[in-house]
Image 1 (cartoon, rainbow, N blue to C red):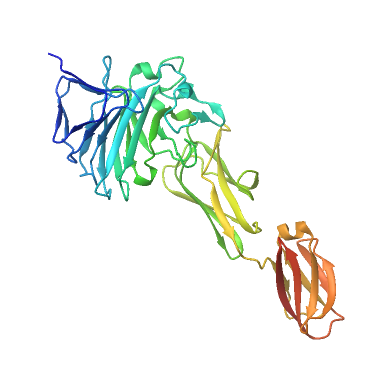
Image 2 (spheres, rainbow, N blue to C red; image 1 turned 60 degrees about the vertical axis):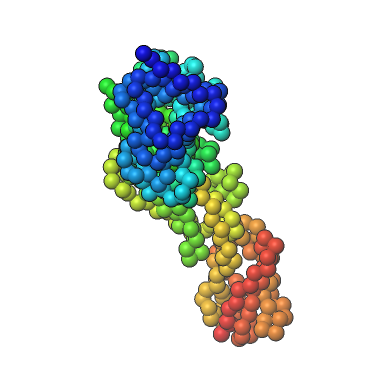
Amino acid sequence: MLLLIFFSRRAMAQAKLVVNGGVIIIANGASLIIDNPDNTAITYNGTGYIQSEGDANKLIWSIGAGNGNTFLIPFGNAAYNFPFQFNATSGTGANGQIILSTYHTPTWKNSDYLPPGVTNVNKNGSDNSTKIIDRFWQINAQGYTTKPTLSNVIFSYTDLEYSPPNSIIEAGLVPQRWNSSLLTWDDYFPSSSVNTTTNKVTLSTLPGNQLYNWWTLVDASTALPVTLVNFKAHVQNKAVVTNWQTTAENNGSYFEVWRSRDANQFEALTQLAAAGNSTGVLNYSFTDASPYLGTSYYRLKSVDLNGKFTWSVMVQVVNNNTSFVTVSPNPASGHINLSVNPEIAGSKPMAFIYDGKGSLVKSFRIETIYQLINIALLPAGIYHIQFLYNQKLQTISFIKK
């Protein structure tokens, strides 16, 4: 006998939910709440299923910190079973919950059936629906001070969900998630494996800081060419140093470091060769010796051998160092050499030399990044060079012997 339970509003199971041949349907934006943190609070005996099939039809499991054991949700429908499972540890927050839902897109064109908050399924600016399985999953951690770390996360799918007109190589399926802060899929590519016999993709480890809400499975041939761990930039000795790491490279060709004043218009600074193919951690670095003053932005372009590329997250740098004109030698006799930041030289500001009493003794325009100034006729003493840049008066000093 088949037991059918239909939830169309908020419902709660305090102790334990046993799925043993029955069917539980969550519909019309309803929530089924499991208010028991034990991993056996949902027990699946091999038959029956819980049907979500909608972004708002949610199962909310109050797992708390996670006890390290396996949490299994037997999602399915009348035609297929596609259970979802994970292990959870290290969360903090007494009210921690994992909100879960999943749904099949009615056609192959996923871009017509996007989850809430997801704006596209593009790759390099083009609709990538044919390379994405026809299903989305919600993994939404709420109520945590620190989100838990998940491991052995298993996404189950059906043959129907990658069949033509999709052009997916099943053995290459990998999980990817939508970064709701950066509005992209391509900033995180975790290590995973696929079992084409059981139709399961297993994500080995998912850190809490990468636990965004919406996930899908993508053909790896359209995913990132390299796996970036991080991309960082910081000011060091008047320069901006960029660093990044990769944990895996698959046919990587090169990296490009780009920068911008306004986070919209970027320019390429350099090109560095990638290792090509690797499975260990590799470290890369590039120093921008002539950075912009004030706030600027950096990002990394990763390019593979086939010309496919992806962008890293964008990193903001605040450079408050105003002494970007240096004098040498100091003390000096006949001449001084000015070394000028290109951004300052490009604006061609007027410069004025004052003696120790504040009297103007010489003026000139800063026009190049290396400029020779004749001071042979100036009496010995302390002098100050002043110039106005970006509405700030800047002063550098030198001694005439």
